[in-house]
Length: 233
Ligand SMILES: C[S@@+](CC[C@H](N)C(=O)[O-])C[C@H]1O[C@@H](n2cnc3c(N)ncnc32)[C@H](O)[C@@H]1O
Image 1 (cartoon, rainbow, N blue to C red):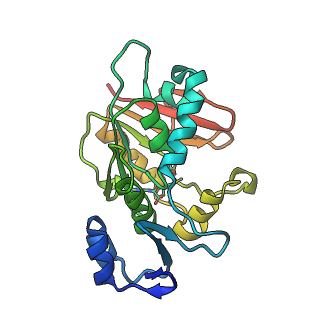
Image 2 (cartoon, rainbow, N blue to C red):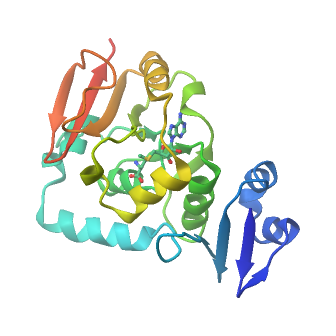
């Protein structure tokens, strides 16, 4: 990994002093071939395709706040899939594929308590840094969803499928995920594990794709996305 601040390189010691919450990931994955820019306290990924990329928590939360001012949370396909119901306590969620926090922040905006997990060091560094620079209460850990222990939380899984249709990857972040972070070829094995460790598992997929695991309890469909829900009694 390379870190540049005002075009000057920073050493790993300088990085771990400034960002102590990233120490173990920075040391363990220091040999990764990627470049970050440090702008004040923000860590950005230098991208060959566009401007450097970081997780914009404030912008996303503000977008959701405006949207949910006029639109009901309870009608959102993801909220229905997670089991959020008017007049009931909100479920606690474990988002095991945090990525750039897009869905974690949407779920957080539903009013749920969210814990998140991410196994890719690049996505983890960007998102953990963004959380540290914000005042949201969201705990992100570095780890593999394929190793989680039994949980009472509703588990949310959004792996990166091997995409066949380029039209399903319009967003800059998605392109970076695919090119820099890559697909998740073990998604099915991980999904089987998650189903065995939780009472309710929600798996996101493109509406035209097949469910990752067979026989969902039910599916909630949005315009381009479907959520397969697996309820284990
Ligand atoms: C499609 S992206 C998730 C995007 C995210 N939902 C968002 O809205 O920003 C998939 C992410 O999940 C992570 N991931 C995939 N499989 C994982 C696993 N078994 N454990 C932890 N993270 C995983 C990938 O590294 C990638 O960052």
